[in-house]
Image (cartoon, rainbow over all chains, first blue to last red; front, side, top):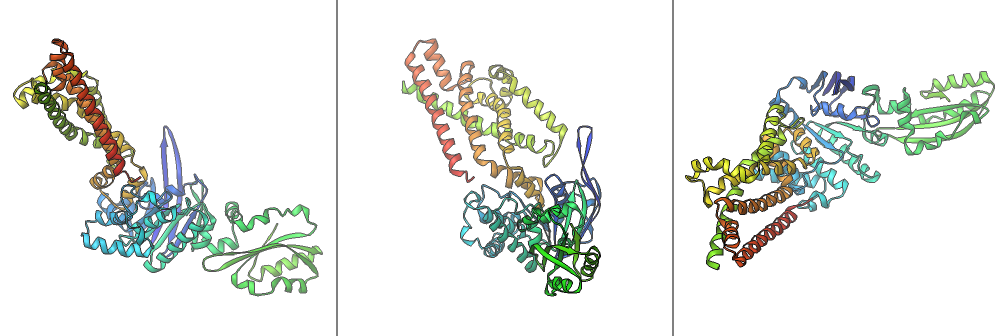
Length: 334
Length: 213
């Protein structure tokens, strides 16, 4: 659906050239929710803006649905943009227009007739559950309602792709959840491909199928979300995962304070059904002390963590770890 | 006294209404151009932008009385004469147009960059962004700007009265100043004050009513 090849973007700052995006290669499949996560200033906003050329890429190629959009002229670009909806952190609603008029706006740009606009907008209002707010102005809405208007507006043209530029960053956790649910629902019902950027691992965890981690303009890790949670390769990925609320206790465990060997197991939903730890203790002459554990609910599966202190003969511990590694569990010695 | 004051009041209204319309006709498009041709804006044209800025600055530097005299030949060309109430509309419009351009420019610049970005992301064309986004979003501020323009034109029209224009300014000078009829001068000035107050009040009210932000 979307292929990004060797994409780079630089900004001139006087004589300096600053590379906001460096040599990015990504592929997003149709119907996928693809998350790009990074800290502020990592270049994620520039990257997503390149996808509809709100930012002009300096180098590289972006192909959407077989069309190289980096080569399009202005009118070609305008046509492609109508197939790409976008939502923003600060919603970007037209403040002098009602909810109805905001959703009608892209249809008006298309020159659609009044009656067609009316039926389309009413369907969308119904879909985002804002029928009663139809004649309200954005200033009278809550953040979550504003974003739902923005989503309805982004869907008005029946786009194939939806870009979300920190779409939930200005919302409280509960509202974030409801907006993410809505995005997940429209992905299924409209067969939409969604690319979102965020700095919240919560968002990735809740709705993304795949995730790329961006740092200093480069993609440093890209994987399926469950794989990333199970086996994060980079420090940054680890930091994002452990930044999730329920992982906090992990930080308070210092390996120096324990006599035994500390290991961290991570396993996907299905492996959790096997009594692995109990088998390990039976098979090897060691003791296992459970220090911490939790489960992260991902969209399609869940990833569990367990931190164990292993006590016993060094060799036995080594063998036990080798055994665990054979059981479809990731093992990390802390 | 009413015989003197009422025709002058009507002349002032006539001058102000028409010069407002004409200065808006010239200044409004200029103001839009100033914004959209700016760097990083939707129709970036750095050279045009520079030229427009210079012309507007030069026109705004002229003291009104001098501009009015300089424009006499143009008035003659358009209206057929260089003095009188109708003729004064020409220099009034020319003097106010660059002012209008700046006022419009600053109002349009207040529009949130985010909604422009949004419109671009939806494939809106430059004219669509100008007429469906920039102007409607800036409307409350534009109304306040136009109010200021009208009030300025009332002031200018009174000045124009001194050198051959009609209206209340002319009346105040001819009767009040030259013939020492203080009452006429006072009435003229009071009428001008009432006009200014009334228009400012109306402008503020309208802007407030239509602003949904």
